[in-house]
Image (tube, rainbow, N blue to C red):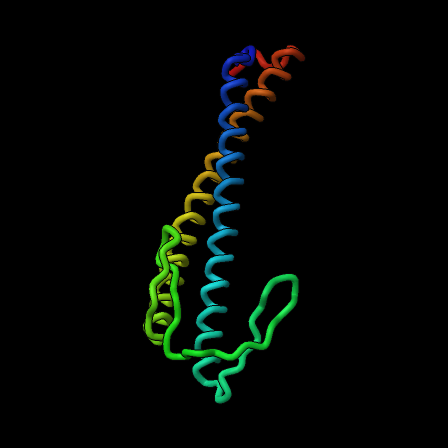
Length: 149
């Protein structure tokens, strides 16, 4: 390689940028999945605590670190969001089971996304190596040392 092809360098840089953007998006997706998993776990713990609470009074978070003491009218049932802004009433045990299944699905999804991120990182690393080798070859050619491939 006597001279670096500017189109090849531009193409490699474009691919590297695209992989970087995809990795960033997938990393954000992983954060959202983890947040949903944590919320599901907290909901399960709360439902179980309400069932065990004798006086049916609980602390309800209202945001900003503020809570209200509220009286639970029906500890045997909960409303569960099943998607598309649709909530259904379920027995508390069924709601816990549904949330546990959802957490399992989220963990599987997180594993899949993590695998994709690792694959993209490997491809980005390979492109970086090719780009570096292309630059190195161009520098050697300019210095008069790169006449051999």
